Amino acid sequence: MDMHVTLDHKPTVLVVDDAPDGLTLMSGLLKDRYKVKVATDGEKALKIADGDEAPDLILLDIAMPGMDGYEVCRRLKGSPRTRDIPVIFLTAKTDIEDERLGFAMGAVDYITKPVSQPIVMARIGTHLQLKGAADFLRDKNAFLETEVARRTEEVRTAQDVTIMALASLAETRDNETGNHIRRTQHYVRALACELQHRPRFAALLTDHNIELLFKSAPLHDIGKVGIPDSILLKPGRYTPEEFAIMKAHPRLGRDALEQAEQGLGSGVDFLRFAKEIVYSHHEKWDGSGYPEGLAGDAIPISGRLMALADVYDALICRRVYKEAMPHDAAKAIILDGRGRHFDPEIVDAMLSIEDEFLAIAARYADA
Image 1 (tube, rainbow, N blue to C red):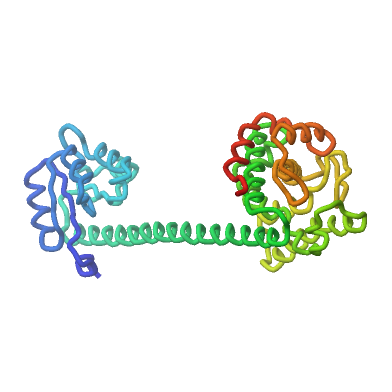
Image 2 (cartoon, helix red, strand yellow):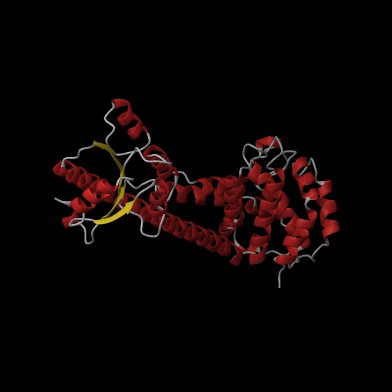
């Protein structure tokens, strides 16, 4: 089917030729089927092609004074605004090398003069149809990319809401506040950003993984939903039996996340970090923590980061069983735990950014 039938408007063809006879011939041939624009030299052709109403196809002579057709084509193909306009060389040059060079410059066709009217019209129609199909696919791809980005953002938002809802569920059973999870996740990110360029941490603490750590950190105490109120809310010290029950919350949280992941049928990056944080943030650098008694680098980095963030926040915040501790006193306890409770390098990172810790604590202070 002819292009002029399939389109709602006449396509525009730009004819570029320094010979008036050539322009007159092609204009007369095309005017009934297409909207025709003309240019007598390369500069004018480039200006028209780069204008607000770009042509749908260009018929381009090669032998022109000043800028020849090859240079015009090279510039057209070098500009994002004009590179997708099909160019057909229409020339008296019949040498095979000239034709090869024309295609090398990015032309879609090469027609020698004197022209055959049916052949010229057929080739113009074919390349306009191909351009229409390419434009459609390009627009379709752009739409799909936008749609994928929109859907991805929806999933990301739903994921974030789900995380915060689960974390809030754990809070309803504990005596901690919503700002505790906000402060700790920001402490974790601040520490990770400070450590990401150090050799021990660089491989894991990429920008992507730091964002996943930030997302998953609020779930660190999700397992507390499985601890009885009589223990969870007890204001005094635990008996050995009560502490044994309390120490089950990392396993309960990890198992819940594993079951959720199995329901999805595939692994999820942020859940991997969430499981690590939930299960290992009570481990201690010297191996005296729980639930596994892991020591040193055997403790996941995510758990080591959360261990410091969680303890620091517990120290500086008021609880039903204790008053808030000033920053310097909390820092002294963290320093005392360097190499025993905490990874020494993570403690050093905290000291490097303690002003940032103070700013986070102030920004998300409890009412």
